Image (cartoon, rainbow, N blue to C red; front, side, top):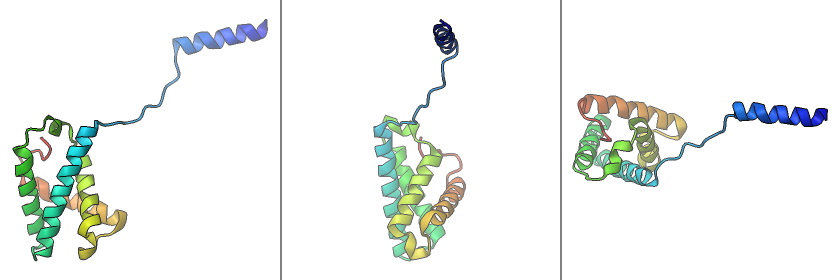
Length: 133
């Protein structure tokens, strides 16, 4: 009888205050695909500019402006869901993987450095524009 009472008590407690569930942060696949296309486009432009002898500042500004103009004229409604920090992280990963070794950026430290550098130059180059909107 005591066992039944204890089970009933636990049942009532869990009904009044349910356990916190874990949820996974899932994103829309179309947003991820668009973000991937943007980062690939930026990486191609940046790496090509570096290979053509541009300084890293010139290459960054050029790639930002060219990629921004493509995004600005895009009619894809998913672009409003892209977070700048996530996009900066993906761009950094792409650039470091594609051509980072050519100017000394490798591994997590290289990605972190390029991300902060990208965000700094982006804010200076296009202060009134949001890269993903």
